[in-house]
View 1 (cartoon, rainbow, N blue to C red):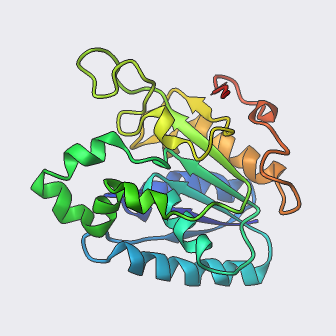
View 2 (tube, rainbow, N blue to C red):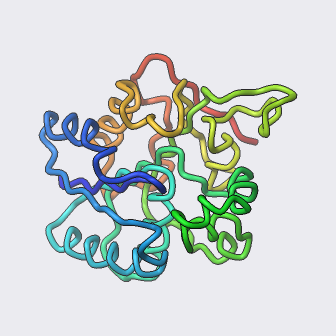
Length: 228
């Protein structure tokens, strides 16, 4: 399968080379999508991503693996482009709800400089409210290695050091794969990589989003969050 990998805010495609190598070893054809948030607006990045997604869709079935902000870029790109959706989207630590840390970080000049419109969007409830629904099968992977307690901005809530578990959820029906990893480097974790591989191998365009529950991922050490 063709697989597009998209990095997170403040990272580069180099951050996904380890995961890319693992996917290639499993027989997937991979492509990397890169951007520089300090140089491009969010809207311009989305426009470029739409072109890349359209090209992949013309070739047949494809998958997307997106780290952090990459998942939001995919949601924006697919929501305004009438193309064949991916067979599966795996979002690694993507803040599908406004992340509380972004609101604090925005008042720090370095964050404003390197994150630009992308960083501002993370602080904006209006941006999230306007985000189109995701019309493709997906899996959310969330890290749980972050600090908790009275001194943590997350309190006692599970988090990956950057994004809280609840902030990765798209809907109340989501059942999130929880792994004991940190946000920044989760794509290099062996169990995360095996999760990605199984999602790509076991999903097709004909399956609805919830036709396959995360319990079928035969990977040791993960938890699936129960939702009511």
